[in-house]
Amino acid sequence: MRKQRMFVVTTVFMTAVAACGSGTGTTTLASETATSGPATAAGIHTSETDLGTILVDGDGFTLYVFTVDTEGVSTCFEGCADVWPPVGAESEIASDLDASIFGSAPRQGEGDQLTIGGLPLYRYTPDGEPGATGGQGVNGVWFVVDAGGNMIGAPEASSNTGTEPIDDGYDY
Image 1 (cartoon, rainbow, N blue to C red):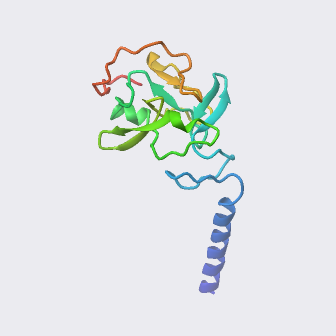
Image 2 (tube, rainbow, N blue to C red; image 1 turned 45 degrees about the vertical axis):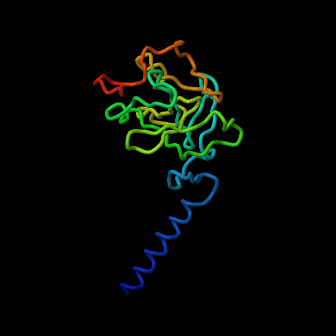
Image 3 (cartoon, helix red, strand yellow; image 1 turned 45 degrees about the horizontal axis):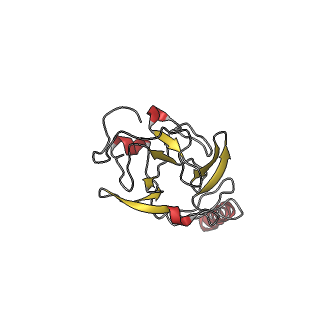
């Protein structure tokens, strides 16, 4: 009886797992395991928002650049990177984007980070759902980017030389 009950429980569990892993709502990227939910595009792609057409990751979360960074050099570490996690360089790029404007930049002992137009890309942890753009304009240094790597609503230039990592204690 006990073996029969264990068989039934195992069978129900495996059936449920199989059902969750099938269909159009599953996307597997090189850098993450399969997820279920709304259908997503493979890798970095664009999405329409109230800010216009912007870059998002494979799960639909908005991507940002940090105007304090300079070409190929990330300055967001420690507390900053807790709020603004870097996008891994292994992220796939959707086929309808110009792959030549994407690249990578080394992070101090943390692997490589995806860049667009030489600027490192980040997510914003408080963006709790795909399509949220809560990081837009934070402290006047964080901005979403369009498919061409252009910052939306950003100032013309940054005052940082890019030589000093930023972790000065304020909320990014």
